[in-house]
Amino acid sequence: MDMKNFFSFRMGMVLFAALLLFGPGAQTVTAADVLVVGVSDDIPPMVFRDRGAELIGYDVDLLNEIGKRINKKIEFKVISWDQKEQELANQSIDVIASQLSITEERKKILRYTQPVMQNFQAIIVAAASPIQNKKDLEGKSVCTLAGAFVIDKIHKLPGQKIQVKTADGNEQCLVKLLAGEVDASVLDGVPGIYYANNNPGAFRILPENFGKDEYAYGMRISDATLAEEFNRALAAIKADGTMQAIRERWLGKK
Image 1 (cartoon, rainbow, N blue to C red):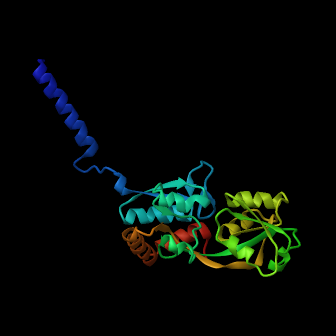
Image 2 (image 1 turned 90 degrees about the vertical axis):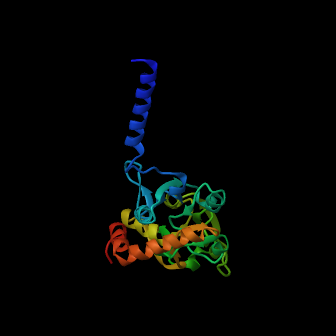
Image 3 (image 1 turned 30 degrees about the vertical axis):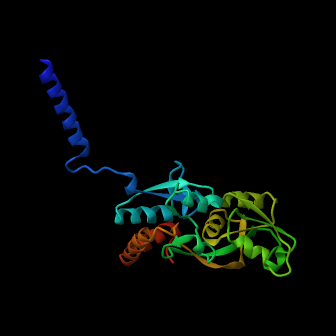
């Protein structure tokens, strides 16, 4: 084979390989096709890890379903919860998920989607604790997540002095509680119920709480188009029963 034919042969093989990889029916994924979602990985049943360390949960399933419907690949990035707004501002993530409660203060810096889950701010104590209500927290210490909006609510309890300690995750707060390092934990009710149900005899959730709220997904204020896409997808997912199926998978039937 002469050099001319050799190079023609090589070029033909390269073109053949390119067709196999990229066409005519193949699809490539570009940066514009990917949405990076910032999450905590210890928020069961919203986002947590299975025994193989894979991220699973309600938000994982719902966000992947949204991705399918808006033709975006969803990539999850585990972040420190108290850095979530900074991660979004730095554009290292596109969406905040996993127990992001809607608050008036956050609306100043975030664009929310429609709500995806009802929640409440639970007071969790050890099973044998004498604490029965908010009033009993006087002079006690509580653990909650760093950056949680409920910290302000705790400090505003009238006439009460409560020491607030923070942790990076729900499990860290509950470990502190069982170790006697704090007297109570104030955490989101959705994961709180999950932990209580899966650790019978370890925790109690008090009838009183620090108020109800709703989970949603958060984006940059400038991402109005993306929020609209999410909301259209959420409406369709709710209408066709997919959201209910995801809910029952992770929270059971009600």
